[in-house]
Image 1 (tube, one colour):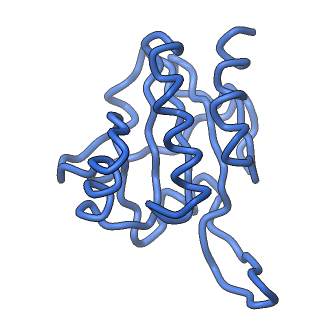
Image 2 (cartoon, helix red, strand yellow):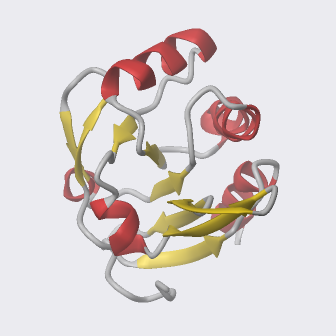
Length: 150
């Protein structure tokens, strides 16, 4: 698990438009990196729309969403809800592994591997400022705003 003060793992993934987005491109700005299991599902929609709704309140903080979905599905998700921030495709879960959010989950007694919903606030120097593992969709925007106010 990543701890505050540790270096944020590198990100270089395709977004919903097919462009490669790198975490290093945002050096000098804070970045919220949040991982969600699947685009256009109830919890992921609530989380992403909650972040969309506070995007105007977080200054120049960048919001990056990451899921295993392919770019075309991410584009449909963005278009449907007018999210307006990069949604990154991590189908082989390499970045999710680096952040420690790919793991065993259980649903109705069935065990499987997937994204453990989590969020990370990366500071201007590329270090983890806050790490929220197993965060709820409702708390993601609240915790971001609180962390930026502190």
